[in-house]
Length: 172
Image (cartoon, rainbow, N blue to C red; front, side, top):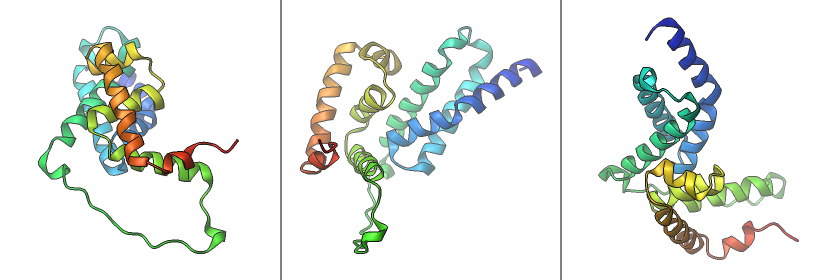
């Protein structure tokens, strides 16, 4: 790459790195893995920077790369094992966590239990705000697949959250 192309890539990277990292975190639930997934996406983008003609589609390319990397990573045998840590209950009322933080934490914990492909659809549809067509394009699948994976993912999330789902709804 010439210096102008390197500068364009650097500007794009600086502008989008935090958003890509957040998306990766929502997909995997771990900040260290999210960093790895974001790095994978940006390395892939850097390799193909010269060949990309439509720079308006960069976000879609990076998003698709992150989602595919997260799904591929989840298929690896060592990722199937889940570590659990039992944390002590906090009894001091002065250390109560803000409701929004607790809600977000419960949602992210629930997403970790949803199968990777369904999790990707839920993150893209509801947390990234993509419509069915854009989600299908990002995942390179049909709109029908997105709809069925959304329904199954929501069912799985409801199954994981159970009664906690009522706690996530804002009080009227």
